[in-house]
Image 1 (cartoon, rainbow over the protein chains, first blue to last red):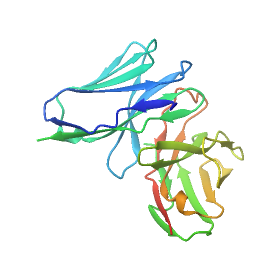
Image 2 (cartoon, rainbow over the protein chains, first blue to last red):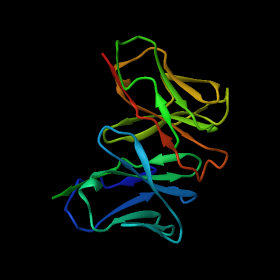
Image 3 (cartoon, rainbow over the protein chains, first blue to last red):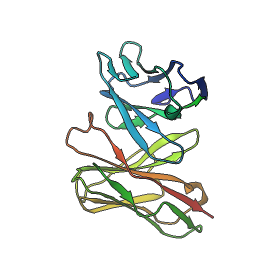
Length: 107
Length: 115
């Protein structure tokens, strides 16, 4: 079983839409959680950490559900520039990356 | 701003060649990592290092070795390149010592093609 699982998508949404991604993890002892963004042929970059109480950064909201072992990312009012692959990252004794969810925002 | 650089963006090598991939970070980070990224498999950890001259195996160390002689530099070595090592190689660093909570900063990646 993979440590981290994501729906690969692709998600194609119109500008202004709200879109949500989920990610499940297998190790209940995992300690920290992140969402990274990766543009085409570029390196991953941290989008936001995910805290137990949930956290928001502008149009982006991240939530953690430890009981069900999943994290989520909500993007409101999607922009064209949000088009990218979003990687779920879970850290226990090492970082585990999901395979990514592809998002394309359409004009 | 953290900067992680990798020696090459693109490399083409032949089967059996010895390949060196270099990574340098300029922020005095303690931790450094090498991943490979393949379609459908995501990022997989090859080796990591938490200190100079220290190395630990990740999930897929076979066919690779590493060297960390200086804090800022972490090298990945393919002793005898094979076609199944064709991939995107990503180096990352993080500050230390709280490994569980820290952001990893990635280099731009090296696309390696082994013929």
